Image (cartoon, rainbow, N blue to C red):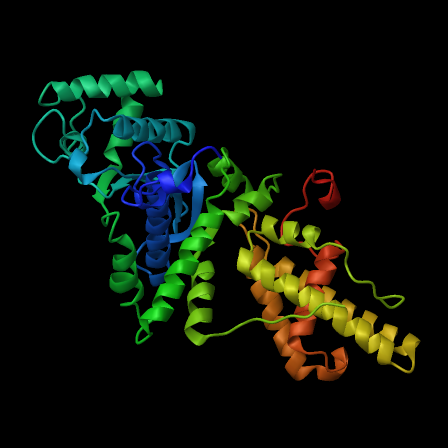
Amino acid sequence: MSESIDSISFHESFPHEVLSETDPGDETQKRFRYQHTYTALVAFQMYNGNLPYKELFCEHHEDILAVKEDGTYHGIQIKTRQITDGAFEIGDSAVINSLTRFVRLLKKFPKRFSKFIIVSNCPFRNDDSGKSLVNLLNQVKKGKSENFTPRDLNKHVQSLILKSEASMVEVLSTLAITEVQTGPGMDDIDAKVINDHIGKSKACEGLAIERLRLIHRLLCEKIYGASSKRVENAVKDYSSLIGGNTIVNAEEINTKRITKHTVALLVEDNVKGNVFLSTRGSMEGITPSESSQLMRYKLACGLVDVEDIDIMDDLRASAEDYFIENSHRAENKVKYLNEYHQIRKIVTNQSVEAKSRCRKTDAPYGTNMLQSIEDRLDDISKNRKEDVFHSPYEILKGLVGVLTNECKIAFSKEPIGGWKNRE
């Protein structure tokens, strides 16, 4: 180095002490963080029963694709901007782009959507001017279809028709079910979610602030993970799944789902402080799986929650270890293998019967089927202990995972070409 350290003035600023004026990376991450946190808020409100959703899809066509209990969808776009930039106006590119996406979605999937929402940390202009989206939405909702006032609003409607390549009827139909909402501020959204929503919920009543923050952080991380990939045909693919058709994107779609059960497991496990532990460890006739990907794929095709799939995977591994270790200890190996195969037949039969009771042609049934299996195996572990040679309930459930991985059990309709040719 040609420059001596002595030539540096210690009264000058250091790079780490000065905010960058040209690198907006941290601001961008802050905006993504807002989106994930707001989605976490929607998920928690869904779990709490304050929103009529049964599940959410993150980054599926929209920032949030919410599925209502009646099977229709809400498309939610989350927009952020500096408060100093003022309220959103109808001519802002962010607003026009969101409206265009909404029109195209309604055009592509007629009658599927019952509401579109634009949410922002910043307010929307709300007056009688030609710059107010709220003004236009109010007029459309009152049944007006032309000659909007002021006349500038007509210009924006025509622009939306051109940009979305849709008809006037399609644009007006979209605007009629569109609304705007002002969310928390970018700097206080975390505090509001923790204090005003999680902290005041019945499930978290009386929890210490540290535990509330933990639930909030884990939920945001769950949303971030579900948002990490984008599937363009989300509505089509989801409709295909509920119609009983297994599709190639089933696994990826399932990782984007946030259901009431997903949130319930996260909240309740942390409220109770539960931790699920599992172990991992061949014997001729009982071979451990080299991979559980097929099992996970088949459960995902039945739209079983990711958390339940993870638990099933742990139980599967534990069940394999359990039977292998018992086989090693058994004095009469042939007798033990016969017992093992009897247990397999009982679990297989209960699973097949559960599927026959739960199978649907117009809706996913994997979760209902799994719950039916759990109830059946719980009853067997208590009232038919001798039939399964006193195998614990968790081991019987884990055996379901083993059998699923071996293509003995499925939680949805089999795809064309079979399960193992899904690529």
